[in-house]
Image (cartoon, rainbow, N blue to C red; front, side):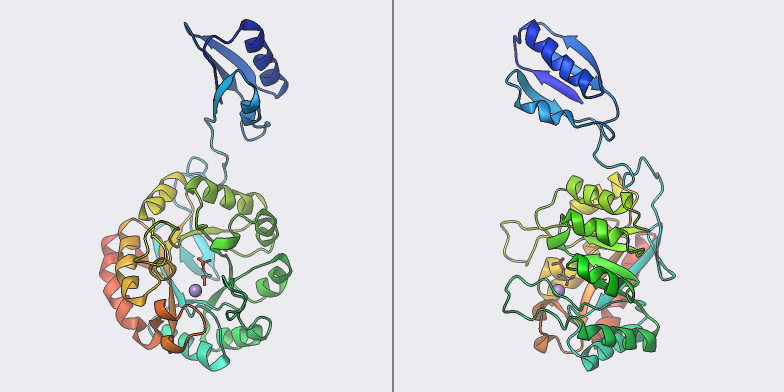
Length: 339
Ligand code: PEP
Ligand code: MN
């Protein structure tokens, strides 16, 4: 870390700062300029207390961290792209996956029909959400526990892998017993206690980016999962909150490129929650592929108009094959292989 002192800081105060730096386990190297003094604090920023707590000292102008706050998630730790295994389906390192399914499981018939349509066109990882994080408490909250039987039956019939969202620690055990991957949604991606509990469930985790989360914070959230033993983390960009209202959220393709550069973890794009309307799902999916995503997660429903959540953005499941065909050449051009 670099500590920048205010101009003309007296020697006694410089000595006090260096004493704190030493006490916190770093080796201080004082660089004296004509007006200004800078202290380079040498040491591992991950295993020592953060010097940022010195910011409150009146003689300090700025404290600049040099090292990232994540290690296991960084590309420096694992230079090639990592491959995550979801019940035998690979994602990352050139393996591209299209995950699809309804926003929420609404009934046996609805989830079975969606899965049948998707499996028929080659989708092998299905989203099956029992619990829904809804902005309004009056909106459909998911079938909850009742959906687990539906999930088990449909999974068995079609032999698909399933991803399901976990909203709280008490849901982790029952859902991990059934799901092949657990989703941490955008609203929970900085719920560090939940991240720790989910990490220990032994399943790969799909970590959505929060609505106002920096890439750095997203990777630190991934670090929580990895350091707590999570067997595989997939990052998912699903659009962030901006001033723009033409789409539900703003798909941040730059963040996909940045996350891929900074981290070895697979990054996928969710064009459905970014778009908010089905007509923009295809162009945003193409943008995700073009910027280097390792996969997509797309909402598909047998009867979108009557969907109980996110109706406007879901692709009709019977038409999903046509959408996939449009995406295939893009995936090939990006040098990725489906599945
Ligand atoms: C979802 O995947 O249905 C969902 C609620 O997503 P997000 O957390 O990105 O809003
Ligand atoms: Mn949804």
